[in-house]
Amino acid sequence: MTDSIGLMESSKRVVSTLLTIFQTRLELLSNEIEEERLRVRQMLFYGSIALFFFGLSIMLMTVFIVVLFWDSYRLPVLGGLAALFFLAGLLVWNSLQCAASERSKLFSSSLAELDEDRARLVSRS
Image 1 (cartoon, one colour):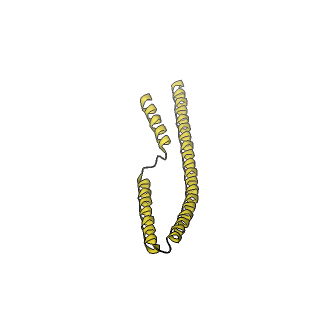
Image 2 (tube, helix red, strand yellow):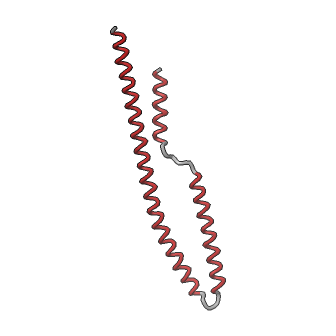
Image 3 (cartoon, rainbow, N blue to C red):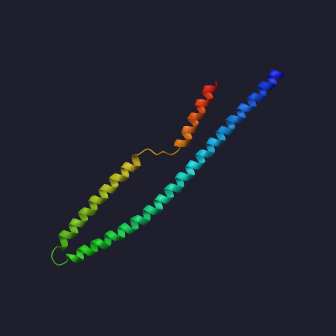
């Protein structure tokens, strides 16, 4: 009878330990999701402000150059600047596609911890 009570207590402790490990991993996963959400929000905020100022400076620089060459080379300057901006847009689009195709490191800590937990459980068996 004492063997079954000892086995029952041991089983309860194993289940309790497994539930604690699972809860800890879920909390870690939740923290990683929150950190990633905050990082993306901050990047979008800074990126949009930077785009606004870059756009404003490009527009003002274009007006300056066109006014500078207004009398003699107005149309070639406008065409050259349009081609330059188009090429810049293509380069940025290509960079965006490369960045979007990269694999995210989201949940890497959680996955590493789960691998360690699995290794520990297998080694105890």
